[in-house]
Image (tube, rainbow, N blue to C red; front, top):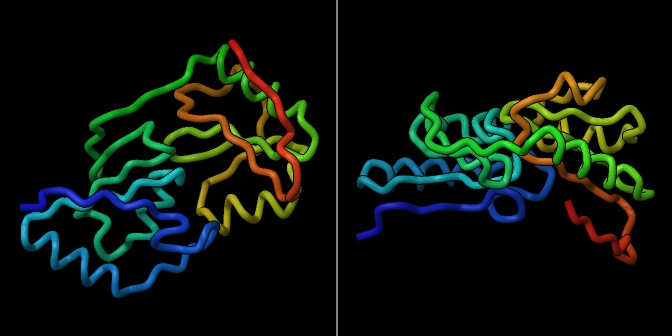
Amino acid sequence: MIKLIVTDVDGTLVKDGSRDINPEYFTVFKKLIDKGVSICAASGRSKDGIYDLFGPVRDEIYISCNNGTQISRNDKIYLKECISPETVKAIAEKLRSIKGLNTVIAKNDMVYYFPDASNKFYELITKGYGFNAFKFESYDKISDVSKVCCFCFEKGENPGFKFRN
């Protein structure tokens, strides 16, 4: 008997960077839940971004957000992993030094974007992925970071960097 179904979100249930999900998925999820199957939505999105996306069944599913650094259901947190402030700064500064990358520092329910981020990137993270985004001010004001990530709109060669702590 199947006890748990874990599904990716972006590129699987929705187009990357979209918030449009086929409502038929909710019907299927509800039927599975009624049969005792647990559902987990796994994504790089924030918890709030996933909850917004899964509105009709959001209180009945598990959420694995920010690339698996937090697993929760409703307000109960089962797992929460954070990165040390020193590592956050080192990774963010390395990524920011690479031309063409837009970098964010993510917490459970928000991201910090850097002042040099493009408007296109801001629109993607807020309207596309549903992140609550705030302009970065200082590493001293950030704690409980779950990931540091970047996005490049340009196609072509990999910038080819190696990061070692």
